[in-house]
Image 1: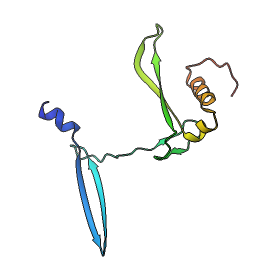
Image 2: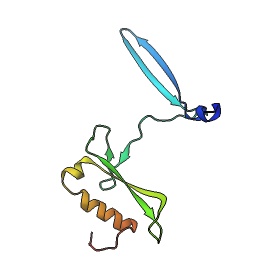
Image 3: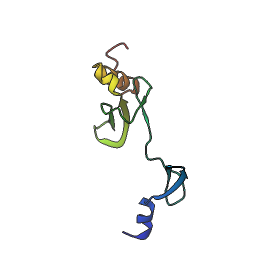
Image 4: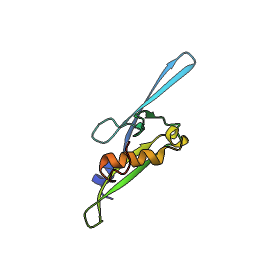
Length: 113
């Protein structure tokens, strides 16, 4: 690896501590090489309910639907759908994916939503 390509993948972590009595607070700021702040966790929203999917929602899934051209070859693009655990628990994920795919133009409108 050259130093320029390796440097772009490396993140710098700054850790600051503050002592107050017997408690020690520690926070960190993730920055890339250019000095831009980057987050460790980026929350997702459910495509069906528009509610935030929490980090503890282990039943949530994200499905990427690939785009194809007229001959059926994958173009390298995709559309992501995030489905929260609440929708999956209610057994509504199939209906939701059909609705979202119809709205995006992947399916012909066979159902009225």
